Image 1 (cartoon, helix red, strand yellow):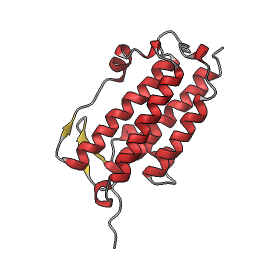
Image 2: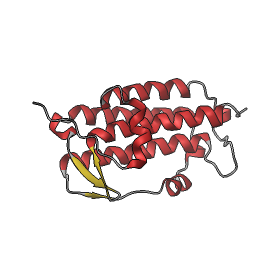
Image 3: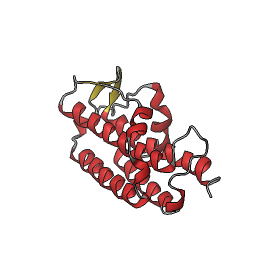
Image 4: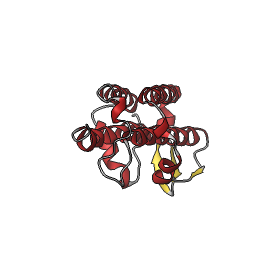
Length: 173
């Protein structure tokens, strides 16, 4: 009898994991890539510095946040796969956004970077064994599995695409 796939994660990530419950992590990542590219094709360069409120990120900052976060989650997958007992730290997304020079970038460059990082994420997941997907580690003091990280990667992007659509694109000029 096959062991069930480990899907351990902190409650904070439930909304991300639940976005693609009907698939496996690689399919979920591919679907979110398609959704990302479809959404970005509707945004103009004139909108990239738009924020729906003064204290919120601009569209470019939101996109750069997705890229930075994907890199961090990707690193977590690699570390757990190769060194399951590693203690992985958390990160402050607002601190990252404040330092990231995303405002100076074109939407095209952010889309190209995301797609390159996403391709790397897919290569990483495709290189994993079935046993790797069951591995768990500690990230920010909480248990997380590689399998769950696949869904978190896909769901995190979908979460921000929803925010982009509902809060930015409905009011951006």
